[in-house]
Amino acid sequence: MYWYNGNLIQSGTLELAIDDPGLLYGATVFSTLRVYQSLDNPLTSWNGHCDRIRLSLLALGWQQPDWERSRYGAETLTTHFPILRITIFPDGREWITGRFLPIDLTQRQKYGISALLIEPPITPPPGVIERSLPQHKTGNYLAAWLAMNKAKKFEAQEAILVDELGNWLETSTGNLWGWRDGKWWTPPIDGRILPGIMRSQLINWLVSQNQPVGEVAFDANWVKGLSAVAYSNSVVEVVPIHTVITSESQITYDPTHSSLEQLRRLHQSDRRHKA
Image 1 (cartoon, rainbow, N blue to C red):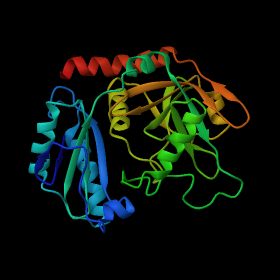
Image 2 (cartoon, rainbow, N blue to C red):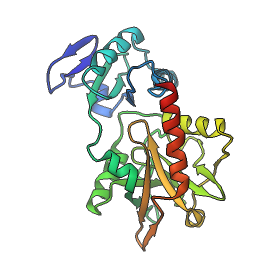
Image 3 (tube, rainbow, N blue to C red):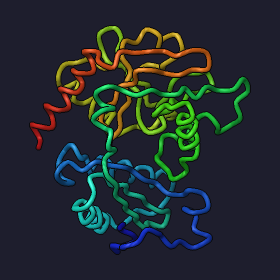
C-alpha cells in the first residue's frame, strides 16, 4: 500500500516511465518522519520535514507538489504505518510510502550499536566518500547504501561517513553526537552533512534546558576524547554507538554514559508534555 500522485494504491510495485529522471538518476527529494499520534504533534515535525523538502526543491529548481493533497495522502497512511517517507519528483508528483519501526529499536536505544568508519583512500576518487549533494536528501543515496552494506559485512549496524581529511561527518542514516568537556557536540552544518530534523529538535531541547551545545569538526584526534557517541534521526530518535570499527583498531565508548540518559530524559519529557 502506498500513495502516488493523488491516489492510494494497493500494490507492491510502482509504475514509472523508462525515461523518468527519478528512475534514471535518483532525481527525487525525500524526507522520512515518525508519526507521534498525528501529523500535528510537534514531535512528528510535519512542517519541519515539509519545509526542508520545499527548500531543496527551490534550490534544485523543481516544482512544488500539491501540498494539501500530499498531506491528505500522508494522513491516509498514518492509520497503517508509524513511519512515512515523503518523496517528491522534479515535476511535483508525490510518492508516500510507509513502514514499521525496527523490531530491535528499544534494544539498540538501550545498549547501543557498532559502526564502521568508512575511511578515505590515499587518493579519494570524487564523490566516493560523501553523499551526493549532502545538504539535500535526494533519491541518489548510493554512497550511503554502499557504506551501510559494507558495515554489515563487519557485523556493524551503522556506517560513519568521513571527508577527505578523515573528519567524521554523519552516519549513513543520521547525524552524529559526541559528549566531551561537559556538553554535547555535533558536526557543523557546512554543506557537507544533512541538516537533520531530529538534530534540530535535540539542539532546541538542550538549549531550552540551558544545556550548551557545540558544533565542531570531529577530527581523528578530537573523537578520542569523547566519553559517549550517538547518532540521531527522526525514526530511531537517539541511539548510542558503543564501538567504532576502524582499519587499525576499535574505539569503544560507554553506551550507558549518564549524558545519554540526560538526552533521553529531555526527549521523553518533551514527548509527555506535547503528547
